[in-house]
Length: 394
Figure 1 (cartoon, one colour):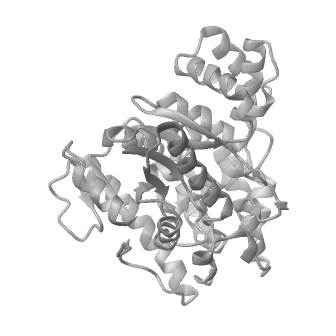
Figure 2 (cartoon, helix red, strand yellow):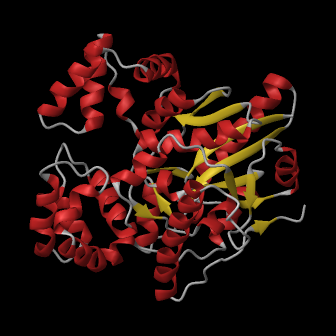
């Protein structure tokens, strides 16, 4: 049987995700005349854009399994809230280590440009001196890292590569950088773009759906039934702004220790933190073309969760010797039994973790700490926090 991996956030799970799963199964059936197992490694309660997930990880993984995914594993916190490179690297290290994934399926916004994405990925695996020099020059001009990289790549390849700035394409070429013995399976994205604020028939981006939920608008036509019946009560990162503000005021000399904080940005953050009462106002003021809003949100998340540059550096090349199962059906349970490379499998962390090495124990402890922060915010709004993994009986 063919096994396909997906790297996901499902924040929340919507019709576009359901379409991707259906297309994967259609493609495997057409190309190999076989059914397939789909394994998704999913961000937990905190996401790559620097935010709290609008629904907890158990609700999201439950919806994924009810809509065709066979096994959902958790992407540990150190990777789930990092930029695209480390996010992709962490997820691929885990999927590669399973030694049972045949394909990695991922959405791209320009399937006809896939060869260019591969060329970009191959070059970035071993950057040339020319590209590195071009990148530095663009950064000196005050551009964000992504725009600087795109500009340098366009000059290097002597062609228009503006499409690589699109969020799904950014993730795509980062996935291609870290795939080892897994074959890529690009799927053309349909409907609204990843970060679009517009809907298209029954497909809307996760961002648009989140915005509609926060505005009290009806999103039923964009999400599967399993999500509709969940009665989403969003958890909001912005409500931690007062807490983050106090941490910043008490750690003026430590701000440079947090990931993505460059020299000068620490002072910019500290000098402005008391001038605003909301996180949105603060981020709008601090962000520039060099320091994007997503980057500032991630920095605030690092501060809240007390994740330092040394932590990211320690784990960026690390392959955890454990997996955390969030949800599965009977096929997913069978796959778990067939994993034979001595990976520790957890459905929760109540069982003894002391047989792991110190690095993995610390990674689990960081994830648990972040979950506790998320749980506190959920309890504040009197919502039900799920404490057990979900299993289908089929």
